[in-house]
Amino acid sequence: MEARAASVDRLWALALAFALIIRASVGFSYRRVAGQVSEANRPAWLWRIRATYFLHGSAWGLASRLVFPADDVPRQIILAFAITTQGLESDSQNDLGRRRRTRLGSWHFKERQRPVTQRIRRAFAAAIGAILLATVATSRADEGDEFKAQRALFNYDATLPPGVKMKEIEKRPGATVRDLTFDALTGKDVAAYVVTPDGKGPFAGVLWVHWLGEPAITNRTQFLNEAVALASQGVASVLVDAMWSTAVNPDWFGKRVPDEDYGNSIRQVIALRRAMDLLLSQPGVDKSRVGLVGHDYGGMYSMMMAGVDPRLKAQVYVAVAPSLNDWAFLGPQPKSKAEYLRQNAMLELTDYLRQVRGVPALLQFGTKDVYVSRVDSGIIASALGTKNRKFYETDHAMTLPEIAADRDAFLLKELVPAAAPPGKD
Image 1 (cartoon, rainbow, N blue to C red):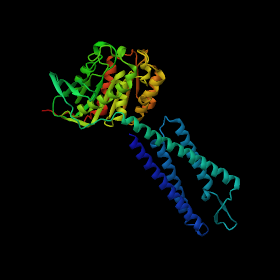
Image 2 (cartoon, rainbow, N blue to C red; image 1 turned 135 degrees about the horizontal axis):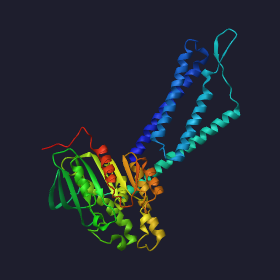
Image 3 (tube, rainbow, N blue to C red; image 1 turned 135 degrees about the vertical axis):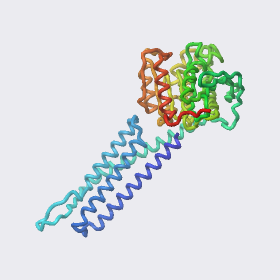
């Protein structure tokens, strides 16, 4: 994602440079012939100069969309400064609009000689603007370099086979559910359900990651019925057991060793990336129509996975907190809290959400959730750059039927075009 952002920045810089070159060329050309321009040719020169102002202004307008995020207040202030000074510059240099009539009735341009103090002020303002823009460009480069290190934490060999071991196959109406394990590169196999629609495809794909809550569904079964229902709409699914699954460790949160959280978190995200590989390896799954759903801990680890995996086209996060640290100190304590925070700083969730700002997202929260506040939800929405945030009259479990209905409608809208239903045998 940072490479894409850098490419956009370069394209915008080239567009701005092109606009400046055209504007300067027209300006210098006019100055060379200003005293020789005939009355008939003056309107043409006026339109040329106006066109250069329009071209230059359009380049800055593109910056508001491509370079300066709407929720990034400091950069928006810099953009406003740049556009305002550009407007002042345009007004002060519009000599073609400063005309007076002579006794002979002919039109001439009134050349204004600006005082030295005015020229100094304008030069100073231009210099400040250049410094601010350079600062922004440098900060963006630093952010990209910093996230490269975060992305590298979750590198793995994607060429390794998934190592699938089939346990059981169950036929349900409109779908087939395969109970299996796969090699998640974490040192042990991970259990998963693979749900595939009847027919040949093409299918959309969704990876589902369960929550940490009610023991009976703190595992891959949480979203199973929902995934089976979506299969009839042309959606294939993979549902995995995470490290907090009751099928893996019934008291994971109470028995976990906080000083091992950093390494375990990295391995969990790699396991989710491997689960995505498993999903995309299913026959008929369209690699361009893949989504992700995560609830609670499943959502928070899904955020990290999304930030380092460019394959997602839709994302849904349910009752998620903006930082793993919001939960980290509710159970066993680390040897040193300061050291824990230092080590896990590379795992701050909002850093990862900023990498997927362009991917359609749905955020779902409960108004009675005692763990996630409305302020928390706002932090997540801001980092993700989305306004698609919904609240429901429920608690952290988020079990109301309309929550699943809204989620499924979003996934179908983003991943299953009405014109491309799944094929049938």
